[in-house]
Length: 445
Image (tube, rainbow, N blue to C red; front, top):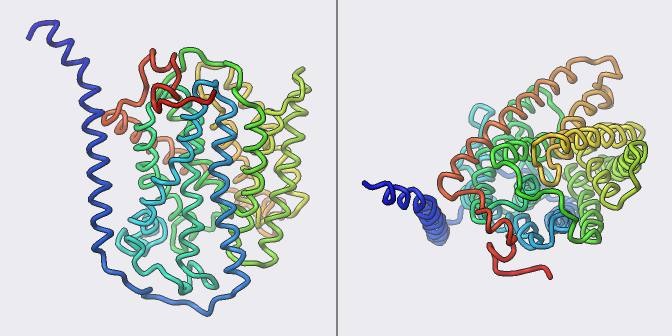
């Protein structure tokens, strides 16, 4: 083979992989749809007690609130990137509503909440295609609400998690690769973590780890996956441009804050005192974090900015997530403020390194999630470190190390697999022109 022929073959390989990857995804979707069409409907095998109408009404509301967070995230991220990448960045979040919803019905809910296999993963056949998932309660998972409603509530958490990751590699990635990675991440990272932490027989839950609404499952997993992605994909060619639309960031923050009440208070799975406690703590921590973030900025000599205030509020919401139902209001005030200060310092340090985490996903969600888990172990009522109990603190330190390692190593493997099937990074020309036009033939302005 001549040198020229070899060069042409090498150049054509990425395009060949893209075609193979796209046709593989299309074929898989068609097969899933056909399987769903012929799958017999099975009634629930295990039923719990009677439905509680008040709990059902609240959980329907909470489920809708959590779903609202994903378009809120799209506005939050979309406003912070360059104008030429707004549509692509927003779609990367919103598109997970389609991908993850289908996977959740087919198998991911089973992996997360199906019959436990050694406390590590659920039996993929337990609720495949939502068989045995209906309007009846479940004695372990949903004692007072339909199992189907519980499954849909948990789905909304799974939807937003891949969306969070996309902020780390915004402005330089191929959309089809992001879509594929989101699906793989849901199956091979998110579902196992959800099983470990929230399934009644999950091994972390059995050990006594407390994660009320997703400090490990959602935020740490997304934060460490973001760190892996930013490292694996490398820097943008021209980072640091002016945000496209600051009002979008403000709007997204408001939608996220509003939806987070469903995220945290809904995790009580009932309309009760625990839900109210989580509701109050959620608002308090976010407010404290907003103030703390801008205070750190001012002490550093910066002006109070809308984007800074918004990022601070989100960090507070992240940090209180694992603790929302376990700590006092006073503790939530401290957790929000302390987490925001820590994340601000880490974000500032990150900006001085070669790591291009575009929208600081790791400093906000990874570090915020770690802080939330540690503070949960410190302040948890009756069992926290301040009450003289060391066991929970040691458990949470170990859990954060395990979850961080699993998330970053698992995500790195999935980035490599995705990159082999569909090259993750766009060409320099595509990046220069902007992803809105080159990936979607659309534009923001």
